[in-house]
Image 1 (tube, one colour):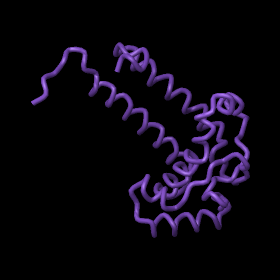
Image 2 (cartoon, one colour):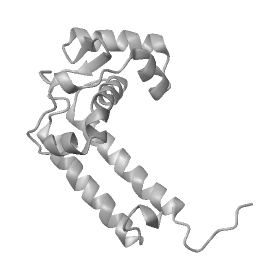
Image 3 (cartoon, one colour):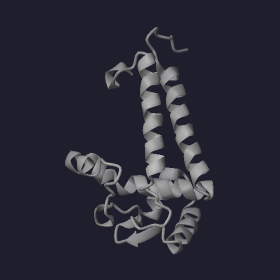
Length: 156
């Protein structure tokens, strides 16, 4: 049995980070009238599309503002197989749902894989209400973690 160390904050961080994740997902479900699994796929693709932006400090800053949408040309495509592995879903399920989302002009095929097109009519990836709401949720998470004595990565 693991001996508890007085400054072990694992459960505390887990509680607060889980609360953030659930609130963020709840807002997505409340805002969009989509099947939850489709929303998960869309947002996993969105995340995969901008990993290269997040890893490049200059690009991250260039597209930091709420109205600075990443153009489709710089998005990194995500394969259906990678989505299947990442979400732990059967490949056929991902393929079928992605094809349906492609027909709705939410996803587009590129030589590298799927992207969420910047011109999708549902504003996935460019929803100012959800982005503003997410900022409030992140601020709350950071305040909660600070209250727990966590001020940066060295405190966990």
